[in-house]
Amino acid sequence: MGIVRMGPPTELISQLRAELSLKNFVETGTYHGNTSAWAANQFEQVYTIENSEPLHKRAQATFSVVKNIGFLLGDSRAELQKILPTLQGKSLFWLDAHWSGGETYGEADQCPLLEEIAVINQFAADSCILIDDARLFTSPPQPPHRLEYWPDIVTVLDSLQQGAIERYIVIIEDVIIAVPSSAKGIVSSYCQQANAKAWKAYGEQQNSSDFQKGLALVSNSLVASLKGVGSRLRSILPISAG
Image (tube, rainbow, N blue to C red):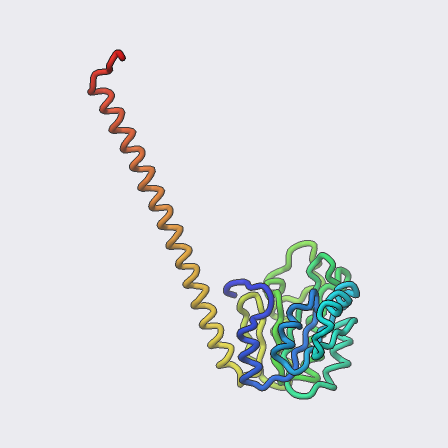
């Protein structure tokens, strides 16, 4: 899966927007609204859906001056049904409405992901879909998540292939990325660069760690040798009575 990053892969999203002429950014799970605020500088129209009223109100108040963001309060599945038929042009979806503890919505309805994908398949199959927190699907999520709410990765991938067009799908940086097959080159190039960067950082970390370990061994060996020399000198030289 590569390294884990916080938030969406903004470099990739910007490239997809430019290369595919994407017009809309649709987010499920507003949280504090920072992702939508970033997207508002990239896309003509942004919609963000939040089912927690306190989080919705807070984000809306914080970014009220940003005029191309539509803040929607409600169930992401229902809100997607409302807005997708009205969208003009292609869209990119950032799906992050699943429950993550704290003040986020959904402890009793933890993962609407499959239904969200089904709506997108129905109304916007030619769009790009990015799903946050891939680790929660590639293996069972940690407590207090309830397993009966969470589909496994095979089920998620199968749902992504139910649309009218063929999709290229990868998992990297804790994000599931599904794009039209025509965008395979964009995504695969991004993944190669991200993986190369991650491996380089890992190698540098390991080399630094090995160097520090080697330095410690040399230092310890030198100290031990000096102690040995001192002991031998004391056994040879006469001891002054002072």
